[in-house]
Every structure is written in C-alpha cells, then in structure tokens.
Image (cartoon, rainbow, N blue to C red; front, top):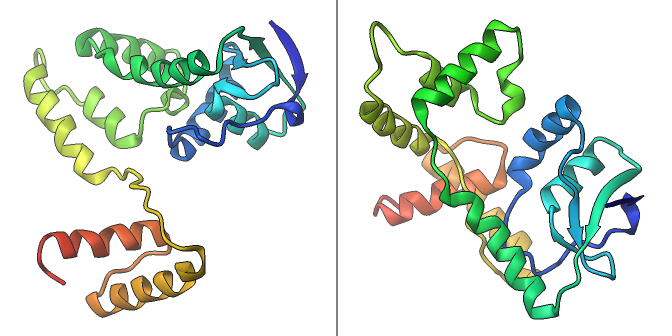
Amino acid sequence: MQEVEIDQLIPWMENPRRNDHAVEAVAKSIESFGFNVPIVCDRNLTIIAGHTRWKAARKLGMKLVPIVIAQMTDTQRKAFAVADNKTAEIAEWDFPQLQMLLEELRSEDFDLRDLGFSETELSALLETGDGDPDWGEFDQRLAKLEEDLYVLLPVKVRAGEKGALQSAIKKRADELGIEGRDAAVLAGKVLQKLFRGKV
C-alpha cells in the first residue's frame, strides 16, 4: 500500500456502478474512522475499485489517499471491478445482532448516522416495541420503506436535445402538479405517471 496525490488518480469512465448517492455517507465514514480501505488501481493509476472513496476524499479536500496497485490484465481489471461491487450486495443482515450493536453504539453516544443508514432505516431498526421484535415483519416494513427511496435510472439522449427534453419534463411536471427542485426526481415522477397510464 502507498499514498499518492489524489489528483493523480484516474476514474474508470466505463464504471457501471452509480455511486453519487453514497458519497456523503462514505465521506462521513472517512471522517469518523479514517481512510482504512485503500483504493485499488492499475499501473496507470486508473481506479479499479474505490470510486466512491475517491469521490468522498475529494469532497473532504484530501490531498493524499492510500492505494494498492493490482497487477491485472485489462479483462481481469474489468471483471474485478464488477465482482467487487456485486459481491458486496450478496451478504444479508442478521437483524437481531445488528440491532444489539446499534443499541450498544447509541448507549455510548455514537452518532449512528455516521454508519450510512438513513433516519428512516434507523427508526425502523430501533423501534422494537415490547418484547422480542418480529423480524419477518421487520423485513416487510423495510421493503415498504424502499418505496420511499430513490435509485438512478440512467438514460441516453442526444446532447443537442438535452435542454429541450429537460424543459419538456419540467413543463409536464408543472401541468401534473409535480413539485421538486431535483431534475432527475421530476423526470422519474413524470415517467412513473406515464408507466401508470396517468399521463
């Protein structure tokens, strides 16, 4: 492992992982715990794994970041980048154990928001009521909460038509009474109306 200037690192432009929504949480984690997981790069300092940590470090104004240089072929590099993200999705939470850990951290005055959970998730995890919680019911509650979360759905449009399309979406949103400052959220809500046959 070595430290390099953050401006030397090159993001992989073909990275299929959308991570902007996670940058704030990772930045908080770095502030709380330090930069403990290095960014994985190839010999040209192109990032293979760790784009979110790189963006978080830039957000925090860091000048130096820890990296590991992996000796991989181009095919291996691409495959590892996908596998690194996908394998992180496979694990599941042991909710009773997680709840005990969260309660323990809270009793020690640790700010649980630094862990990356939303306020809604923390509320659902820590509101147990009387007796042992029904974790099957909790799974259903958490799934319902996902209805209030947003994900990015990337689309491609011609560069010359971007402005006109954004204006059309804003106009349609106004006609439908859809409010919001985030252009992506507005577009998503208009598409949802279209999908549900209400446009």
